[in-house]
Figure 1 (spheres, one colour):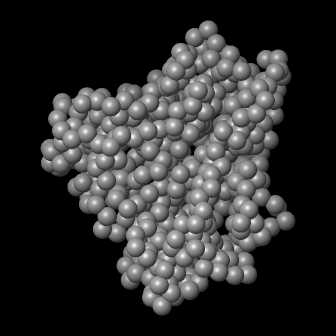
Figure 2 (cartoon, helix red, strand yellow):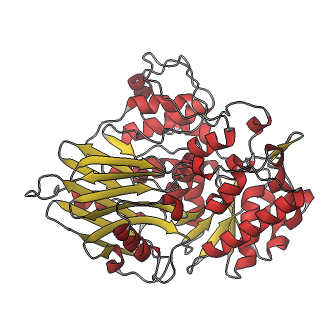
Figure 3 (cartoon, rainbow, N blue to C red):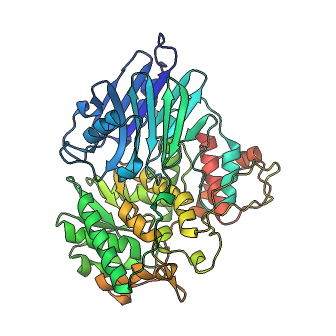
Length: 509
């Protein structure tokens, strides 16, 4: 995991803003191993914080001829004749400047490249790595975290209000600050100076092809092969850990990790009094051949982490409360630099009960309620006839943001095997009956789980449990914030969590 800042002013005779050193330094937690910055031109600043995972640190990997690069992520299928994926990406962008194909870059990434007065800004197809831009007048900025470029931008109350109408924050274009925007997943933007001249996209729809027609055993064998091959390629050179909650997704990832490396570590997060499975995670140890470190978290510890993460580091909305769980887990696994997760398995393989019935799932649903004195401009998520594709496009970036940002606070990179291209392609083209069947969710994954573990270890889905509703009592200025956004109801359930997030941000700003 790395962090970067890019600043460009269209006036080539000017120099970049004098405040940028503090903006850049605010992201150092994302890349604690090495920091460098350069000025390709007097009006351009490019700064990079590096979390070194592949090869050795070499600032020259971020430059090739007259191309300059800042980059965050991993490209797993890079040409290994290069020393690492950064070195590869710099060469690839130079030689394919006007013909970049994200379909050939299997991984998670966000980057900015500069060459001869032109700029490329790109983000991976599933939005695994956050990327924000700020554009105003003759100024263009891009960064790994929004607080590094928000400057004095006020809160975008329209975006914050719309969060109350979706389960998670699934607006993948706007941010919670005015003039600051997310680069949507799969988009590649090209600028001439500070003027946008091209905006292309590579959508998850590209992974849908001819429906597969195999037997159940053949589906299981193919999925087994894909997971084995993908995870083998993802094992890092540095210390790493795999999270295991006792659910099907993270348990399967951990099983394959245990077979590919004897150096793997395993961790489970137990929110005391909330977790039905993690409190007894030791049952999984015989199948992994290794001890699982159980991290017990009290409500008080979770609430303290919530406030610290938002107020002191992120200055952004968590997309879901799992952000805080990843923050706590990543702190507990040091000196590991990589954390394997099970993100996107639910959306790809039918893990939510909503999928048992046809229609839009609650994870991509926009449901307006009369809870504000002044209602916001309506936000419209993209809805497809395929609910798995719909949630892959809307909900998965939220989950990935939660994992990425929460772990990055402690300088840890998350890796998501289920979002490898071959696995996504497989999942989107298998019949629905292998995702949900007879009231069972994640049917195919469960069958694979039973082969690797045992049927007795299959528990009802719980997901990340925690104390989100208790956050309502944490902020000092809750009533002031409610009045500011015109919230007129007595909050219940998720509304308490969302109000707490907004109130902490208001207090911080």
